[in-house]
Length: 159
Image (cartoon, rainbow, N blue to C red; front, side):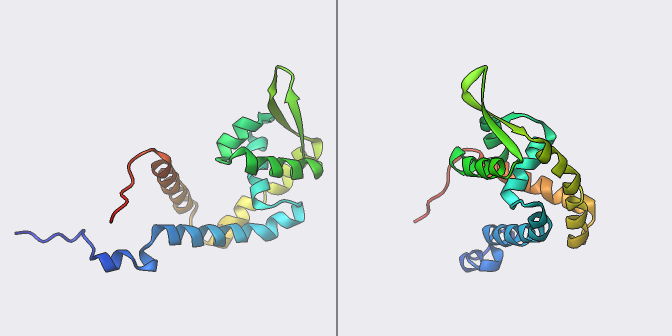
């Protein structure tokens, strides 16, 4: 009879250092904290930076498109957009073609901020000290984790 080496004793599975959720939570907090000193002089929080990245890629975007792209619910996105608008970086207007749709457009100040943001990725890469290929691989693995976690499927409830 062959021995199975891929099954862990139940107690091992409950160790904190074995939890994917713990590693992801700590990695997320830690890496996002590296952005703070780079973003503060620009007047941005990390979530606002993500909105700006999406708008620098394509401008304008609808509120619905931004919410989907950033995987945020409208209740979370709306305050971000309001703060960016009050900071003079974006304009929020109803789409004349569809009054139900919100068009988010960069202002000239928002467009100009992109030049300063170009320094952020190289600074983060340097600070992490990992080759770009490893960081890209990590991003791809995490994208796969996100896709798997957001795909409807059964969750074992145990007990």
